Amino acid sequence: LYVPTSTPSGDYWGGHRLGANLFAESLVCLDARTGERQWHFQAVHHGVWDYDFNAAPNLITINVDGREIDAVAEVSKQGFTYVFDRVTGEPVWPIEERPVDTETDVPGEVLYPTQPFPTKPPPFSGQGVSLDDANDLTPEIHALAVEEMKEFRLGPLFTPPSLHGTLMRPGAQGGADWGGAAFDPQTGLLYVRTNEDTTPNQVCRNQGADPNVDVEYSNNCPRGSYAIMFRNRPGAAEPARSRLGPIPLIKPPYAWLVAIDLNAGEIAWKVPFGEGSRIMRNHPLLRGVQLPARLGTRGNPGPLVTGGGLVLLGGGAPYLYAFDKATGEEIWRGATPHRTSANPMTYRARSGRQFVVIATGAGPDAALVAFALPPA
Image 1 (cartoon, rainbow, N blue to C red):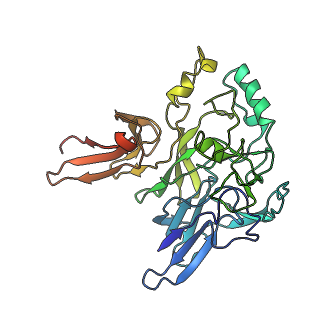
Image 2 (image 1 turned 90 degrees about the vertical axis):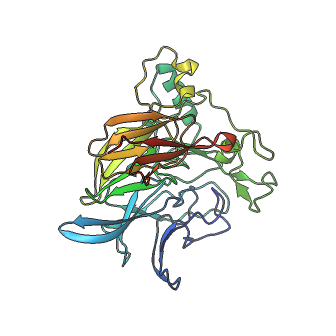
Image 3 (image 1 turned 30 degrees about the vertical axis):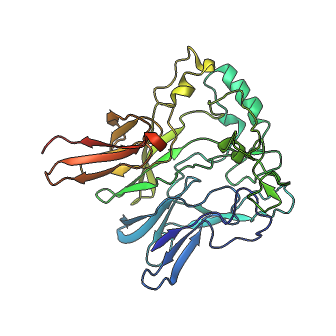
């Protein structure tokens, strides 16, 4: 039994839980018969970035340097793919402990001095933020993005949260999110959809502003993700407003579909996924601008790969897409009444007809939408 675990407490302060915080943000292998721990790997020490393992791992068989390995692969919010021998827990490729920035202005916080970095495969998502990443769709947007980014602490992956606010990339939804990845045993390719965006990461003194959290500091701050996610709800801080509105601070594309060759530990291909939200494309700052066809559509769900040569993926737009699994070329899309909101699945009915089903919408608009393949 392979169990991915979460952050040990609310984001983004750990002054009340100093140390590595084992077994948080870890992949833990248990004997399913007894519950006894067989092995574990911690991907984030003393996590304060919301980089929990929130996707199910993939059980795979790969061939590396002529050796067949029964492995387990876990994709992560920070854009890494961790691959282990699923019996022994040994990494298929070395994972290095590297020094990271530990300078913090948050009272009581003590960051861990190193973090694990897989040497292979390469990251499938952008990591860290600098002014070179500022959105440049127009000169005006670029100037506004640079101005706002200068208000935050910027830096590489694992730059600490701060009292003034840190811009974190990947953001709290990844990288990869709960939709996880799909593995093709025919080719050894692992398919993952990745979000490309930033999350503002500010820590402030709680002082009762967050009554459900009994800690000295929380992220319920104007530049904290809590205020943005729960805007206009009781107890939420008033979020700082961006003059860019729904336009991200960084350059597009904002989502990719990535194929990772797990026999070689390399990226096989990557293509931008989705046109981008209509709200963003229709924003006044972009009026009259010739935009890329695929700005990228962020979302949580993951892909489905088929034996017939397709990768199916939805999430973030009212479409189910089909891509050629060898090249990433879009070969079909089907409209849905609302945004797709889950991983697709497929089944064959008693009649022999093959169907693909995906969940769409939320609340009263939630529905399952089925697409039927032509009769064989």
